[in-house]
Length: 217
Image 1 (tube, rainbow, N blue to C red):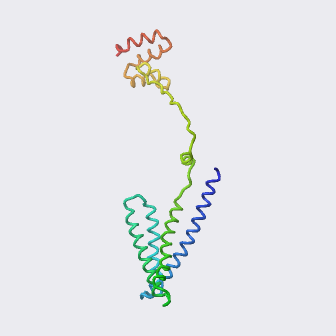
Image 2: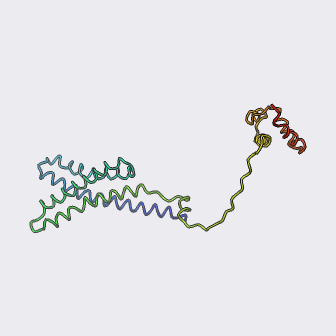
């Protein structure tokens, strides 16, 4: 039981390292293909590298935003950017494969192979963000997840609340309240509180005080 958090951290760390490695490879393949396509389209060699950064970079940023804004109304916008970036990247990689492939290679095959890196980049980036946000299950959650033995617990009877001003005064006095404060709280004269508390040890005096409670100002 104590080794589960360490095992989980190891598994998550290994998964993150693997996904990052795959993401770098997919990004590099897509980067070179899109940069070459940009050069073939007339963009200067010194600037061609920026185009794949824009196309594939928006996939990474939008994926992080989608995970961060999950469940919120504003999540539609990063989802829109994510789908648009993925569509542009897959299409551009497929076009570059068709243009640059050998004549004996079918266009469909070349386009399908070239579409794998951007799709993998999209999936692996999302997986990396999810793994980094995953947290180990705490002891309280483990106790909820694990089946527990049924134990019948009898309800504890609560003490009855005070039914009269005298009883309430006794309770408040035990809690450290002064006579004046008790009198203000109960709504009687301080002398009445004094008689209540002085007579609490005498059953006869308590009865007499209770009889005269309504006539005291």
